[in-house]
Image 1: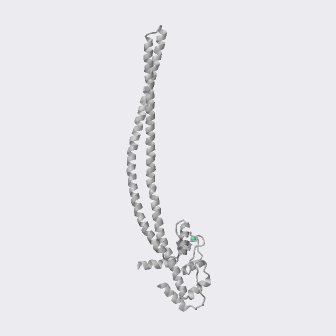
Image 2: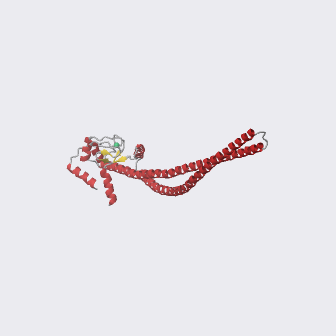
Amino acid sequence: MAKKKKVEETKSTEKNKGKEVIPTDNEQIVTQSDIITSETQRSPDEIAEENTIAQKLMSLYNLQQIWSKIDKIRVVRGELPNEVRDLEDNLEGMKTRIAKYYADIEDFNNKIAAEDNKILDSNILIARYEEQQNNVRNNREYESLTKEIEYQKLEIQVSEKHKVRFTAEIAKKQEEITLLDEKLEEIEGLLQQKKNELNNIIADTEKEEKELLNQVEILQSKVEQRLLSAFDKIRTNARNGLAIVLIDRDACGGCFSMIPPQRQLDIRLHKKIIVCEACGRIFVDRQLVENQNENNAE
Ligand SMILES: [Zn+2]
């Protein structure tokens, strides 16, 4: 291991200063003298502790990688039903429009029936006036009845005109309904297809998620409870679900706050667990991650 070799080298070149530093998880700030000591001389206990911290950090890092995959699956799955919901809304809107057209048709049919009644009434009146014309006493009465008959005939004509207009309106609405019915059928087919797709995807991703959750459980069992609780708490509060981050271009990989060089050095030493002062996320040394990736590649 390259790191152990480096420790041996520093041991042989530097003098033992005899100072012991036992890191605790609560201690966040590493002083300069601590670092010098740790670089120059380390007892086997310290090295073991450092390895433990490195292991803890890598366990959390690996746990984070799996959680991030799970988060991604959940986001994708969360967005899929939207497409189905949009189609359902679309379908509902069409059904409402069709219902409205049917209501309009009923309305026009009622109006036509009303006009028919008016025509019937007019015809009754005309028959009565014609009957009366046979019994008039003078021309004036006869003319008056003729005028009434003409008026009723005009009324009938107006009603017939209305009926023609209403019938045309009904035909128009029925045409719309036919078109909408066709579209409705199309969308219903599409909706069924999307629902099947969605169910398949949900089944697939649930299977994948379950496998990942199993991996989470295995990794969690390797982390002490106190650290795991802290990690879970940070993860829950972090907007991107990241509880452990790398330093990227001198900034926190979670909140992008600049990290002072001294603190970056402390992180590289991974003698203790160091968190971002701005966002509280745990830092992991990039070298540790790269070492693991190299080992995995071998
Ligand atoms: Zn941060």
